[in-house]
Image 1: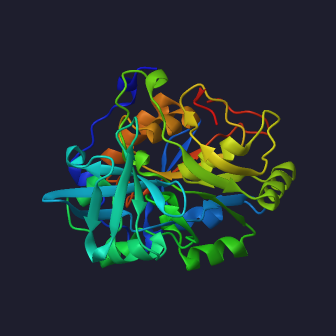
Image 2: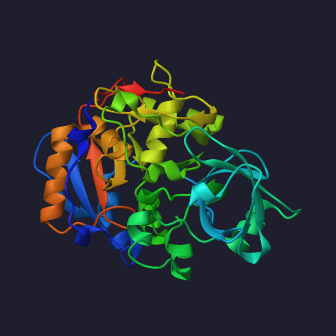
Length: 358
């Protein structure tokens, strides 16, 4: 499909620079296969869900993956993208023309890294020197990797270390937050528990590639960056059991959705999964794992907008975004929520090409 089909204009004032306070005060646009859009709030979730439904969260934890430093006299910046091993990370480098394989980059706090290799996509493999764990080095030298549409408008501060982390964050490794889960608070979870709503977690370490626009003219020519994910066997078993009992699976965020789809076989059964996925979902894809997606509003021409267009239909999502713009919804990572529901779900596949399958 032509990437231009997924373009739209967004006034800059619609981009949220801070989250709602409290988090669960965010608005939520309801988008179904039929019927008008509904303007509701995240706090309505306990009334919208049914006992036996299961919310699936991503428990990845964002690390301070944005580094500033020098290579000789030149200023450089590095955004870590994906862990390779205990001391090596793949990173996108700003002012990369001043860094060559074999050079040493010097970052804040006495942290140094050797540029071992430049990859085909222009990123570098950085080897962090020293004996301290890389996680300790990053806490000392790094800052939270806010998306460019926020970081370009204001400085990153200490509040972002709290705001850009979900209450489920447990597994270090993401360089972008699974932002749909930012809306949840202990109070909201307590209300969901009281309503008999199930809750499961999986792990997908979100990479910086999530911020990159699709530069190809056609989706068939776009190469997805891979991300590491895991679905435990017992989690898969409980999710399959919930579906068999008639419960709906609600993917909280596109990261949960992408990993669930990666872990689901042609028979519709979710299986254990551990490894990289570069699943690229575009209109025409047959969804197998979930009934509802709770997500934020996404960038034009992005793989995430393509994904929601695959789930709910391109025309529907364009209309929903126009409604959201006209009625004051807040967009992107710190913005409001969008509930996407396929009413006719029922077990098997749902309408909605899967490109670059894992």
